[in-house]
Length: 235
Image 1 (tube, helix red, strand yellow):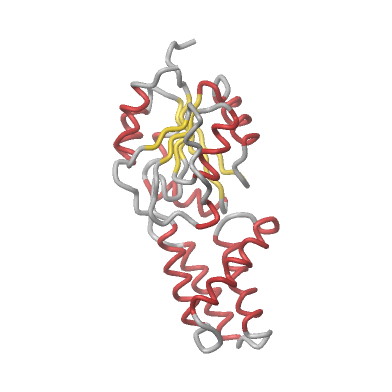
Image 2: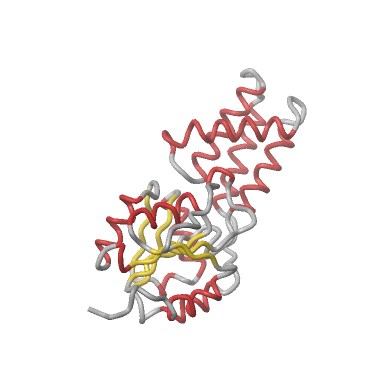
């Protein structure tokens, strides 16, 4: 067994390794314009968020659930009178979202390159299976990872399972991500380190308070700080 405090490092994908939420924001803006004849933009966004909350338990996270929530919202706002052209356009912008380009975030590649071969690296992400596989392939980052876990949700149980499967348990593992709710709080609850890398467009449903009192909580401004953080980590 290595004397290093950490042997396994998990990375979130969307808005940690590459841009994601900005494309949802652009799609939502298009959706608001489609329904501008029926409701104010802010009202459309509020109803869409409500639909997303309701539908998470049914459709999970990702583009397909988001597209179905847009259709549901359009039907609600128009009281079932949304023309077929609007529904068709919603389906079209949903498909466009599935094909958006992959833009890696600053320092992502350098951080992975510095850690690869020294630690067991695993990408831990939630969302549509095909979409996440597509983005990983197009990112060019896939070769840095020793394992990829695409999950329906991220909980303490999820992290215990993954870090137990790929390492010596969460106590010798670290999770890095932009979502306090999904990446940091449950990883710390499982016993791992949680490294928060803020992103300005993190989805509102992923917002919770920072676990600042947790001894294994860290916050860094970008992924460029990860190698030094890991190297200087004390057990």
